[in-house]
Length: 114
Length: 109
Image (cartoon, rainbow over all chains, first blue to last red):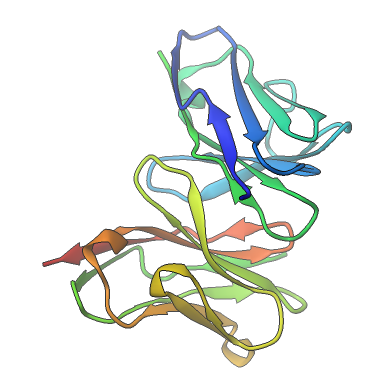
């Protein structure tokens, strides 16, 4: 149980375009979802926290107009990277929580902006 | 503010040898502590967690960790390492999870 999926697993896009990443909790209802970013050989940095039906709470330094997060249902959250640039290239990981302290992580999405 | 320090960036051990990965945390109250493992290009898998109670926590894949409040530590241990344990290991403290910088484990024959 407690499986989280992400789609796509890998995406390459051109600079200036937008990319949407989906995060789904497959077998539980996720009241809270988290989006992380991981640079090569570095740790995970929390970008934002979203509760179903509410606006996401962004961490300091994360541009909310650039990284649009939607958590429209208890099983789906999306992260849209708008007007992507090469510096947005990274590994994006989502996690989901059913209300407790434990987070269940997705497999990640590798974004490359050319 | 909470923080996590993993002093060892990279550790190499021989297969069959014992392993200890260090983790020190800073948190104002009783922390919630986690260890995760990440294989290359993959997401994170929870190895074990400590919320309260017994300070020696057993996890999956033969791992254990001990919470030592006096030392603000939560070190991960395994008595005998397998080649498949080679991965990146992250310690984390919550609530509002903050991750350490990770320790990359290399296992040699």
